[in-house]
Each structure stands twice: as C-alpha cells, then as structure tokens.
Image 1 (tube, rainbow, N blue to C red):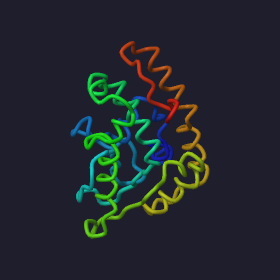
Image 2: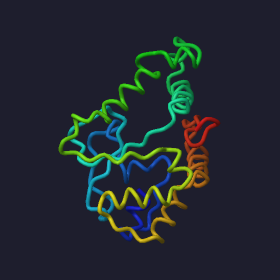
Image 3: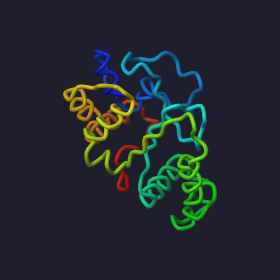
Image 4: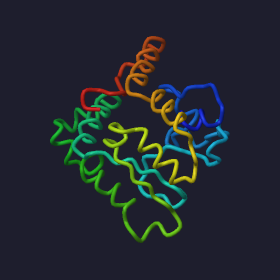
Length: 190
C-alpha cells in the first residue's frame, strides 16, 4: 500500500488499522470502493481465501507453518476466547481441521496446484524473506507486476511499513480506541 501511495504522489501513509483503505481486505467488506492510488494501475486486495480463479495476479505470502500456528492461536485467543477455550492447548489447536495444520495445508495446496491457474500468475513470497530483506522482495514483486518502481520509493515504502512503524501505529490506535486491546503487530510469536 505504501509503495503504491508513494508512486502515485500521495502524501498519506498506510497505517494500522487503516491499511484497508489502500489495500482492502475482501473478507471485511465486499464494497472495496475506488482505488486510492494510480500506480500500479491495478486493484490490490488482501484475501485469506483458498484458491480463487478470479484473482489474476496473486502475491502469495507464505510463512513457516510453526510460526503461523503460534500466531493464529494467539489471534484466535484474542478475538474468540470461547472458541479457543473449547479447543484447549496449542497442540490441540494445531490438530483441528478448521484452524490447525490441516487447514494450512489445504490452503497452500489449493494455490500451488499446477492445474488450477491456467490464466493466473502467482508470485510466491516468503514472509521471512520479506522481513529480512523487504526492499529486495518489493523490487521482485514490482518487477513481476511490470511496475518499474524507483529505488528511493522502495526505500521509503520499507521505512513506512517497518515493524517499528507498525507497532507505533498500533500503539497510537490503542491509545485512542479503548476497544482495541489485542496486540496484532509483532507479538512474541509474530
């Protein structure tokens, strides 16, 4: 989102929790509105769904499954404590069909099957690579889109989207919205 805003000459910064204004989450609202940027001239959306043939160019962010399970366990505990109480331990959570490793496997397999994407492009990006070298990964993504982004835009986008900046943004949001109690950005297990 931040790279698109910079390249479009916009002065806004995509901050927590309003990043959905720039890269809308299709699961939060189907009415995603107008694009807030002009470059790239494509609509970017965020989705957690299994394979969808309507997504023409997909940036699939994959993460170490152990870290995914820890993070998702914490997230479900924060957002749906009753559900988590009925499941119990992290080990039990990881074994459930709905939330655990079987769901993670189904999801990634749906996107990596060779027979389902004849007219679609997939750009696989490891979360760990994005954290370790965000500039390099953003450059690869923009090249994959045919979007020639200058190096200074990438550097600025990486800075605007750094873990430190996201944590500061979430802390500020928490200070002005008493309903926001969870820590979404950069918890102990990501």
